[in-house]
Structure formats: C-alpha cells, structure tokens
Length: 347
Image (cartoon, rainbow, N blue to C red; front, top):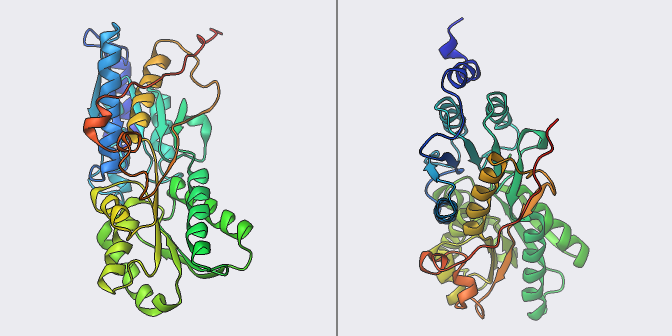
C-alpha cells in the first residue's frame, strides 16, 4: 500500500516525526472557510486576525493561516485542504464545513493525529469530533426572517400570503436550519399560508441562483407575495431576477447575510430585510477558543457558543451597531468579550 494514497496515515506519520506542539513562533491556526469569495468569510478572517493579535499581545504568540476552496460547492477541495494542513503540523483547525456529513471524515483524521478542530458557521452531524461549535443560531435567524416577512405582508393586508422558500444547497446545515426555522414560524403564525415553491435550490453562487430563480419567477411571479432566500448569494441572485422582470418592490424579498448589493437593496426598498450574522465575532471567538484549548482549558463545557443574529431593515441599516457586522472600518474598532473556561481535569 502506498502511504501517500492514504491521507490519514500520512498525517499520523508526519505528526509522529515533527510533532504538533507550539514552536518558538507560537501557535499556527488554520482557518478554512466554505469558500474565499463571499464577504461573510472576509469578516470571519478579520475577526480571527484580530484575536491572533490580541493573544500575541498577551504573551501567547498566535498566527492565522487563511486557506479554503475558491468556490463553496467544491467539497473535495475543502477535504484536501483539511488533510494537507493537518499533515503540515498546524496546532489547530477552524473549519466551516461545506457539508454536515462528508466533512466528518477529514475532521476525524485531524482528531486522530491530535489536531483540535473548532467548527464555525455550519455544523457536523457527529458532535464528538470537534471541541466547540461557534456559530449563529441559524434556526432563530430563520424565525426572525419569517416573523418580519409576515409582518410586512400583513401591513399590506395580505393575511393569506403566497410564499416561496428559495433554498440554498443540500447538506449545508446552517442554511437548512434557517430554512426550517422560517417554515416552522410561518406555519405557526399563519396557518393559511400558501407555499408556491419550497423545492428549488439556488446553489453556491449568485449566477447559479439567478439561473434557478429566473424560470420560477417567470412561471409563478404573479402568484407570489414574498420570498425568503437564506444566504447572501441566493438573495442577490433572486434580487437580480426580480429587478430584470420588473417585480422588485412588488414581490417582497427577505434575505440573509450582507454584501454591498443586498445592503444597498435594503436601503432602496428592494429587499425588505436581512438577517445578519456577526462573522467578525465568529472569527474572533473561534480563534480564542482554539488557543484556550491548546492552553489546557475545558472549552467543551457549554457545547455551543452563539455569536448572535440581527434583523436589519431600512430604518436601522445606517446605525453604527449594524455597520459593525460587516464594515471593516467599524470592525477594527470593536472589542470582543471572550468567555472564560475551567482547566481540563487530567485523567
């Protein structure tokens, strides 16, 4: 058997030869997002770098390695990156898994060679494989989206709304939780709702979302009162289609996450609201947690670390507290409160 063909065996050999302990240059933490292009991940990266600077200033030298697939649909590339980085002997991994099941095997391989993993943004099915989950309460974000969209429609007198759930991608636990929170809330608050469509998937990019949304809006547009798109690219792609067909402001759109196009659409009234995460805080806290684990703290206490979810509308989009969620200038001024942990009890 060629050992190079078995990544987990190669990882074990490498770690046995080189070790995976902090060297004179401090802790090396690799941050692996779902993809490198969305602005959400850029905020996560900025938060992680800020935590590394603060830890270094406190006498715990820490550096961030930024590495991930270019596209969020490239699961094989994300697996290769996790395996390669563990092979190179990093001290810890922060991972936003593209898929809740297929990413379990590489995380397990990290665990086998002693590289701790903190999961961010979107979970894994097997919670035993990682040290901490640092993320938005995505189900609650979906609830907020449902509540706000129903209120907008009710204010127009639409008490029996016709809705579309424009899903993101199979296997993405974070968006699946948002979608479920939205559906459950709408069904609970509005039993007379008519679901026009709940089975269309936007895919990982704005372009794929536009291609999927176009025929649906062409076919059902006159029957639709409101739409929920559970991430930035699905919201941006749907917005493009609504504008191209002259249905912006006629069909109410609720989105999730921030980018300049969708933020500007909220300001102009083409999007009725966004649920924003706090990706900067997510990056900061996940880095802090990995290092505290390496320092001997029991970070598994209280399994999840929530980073918050926020309803953004036209009347609060210009507040400083809103800009802190996505604007690099405002993020650089932030101070993040960190949790404290007890030391692990040695067996």
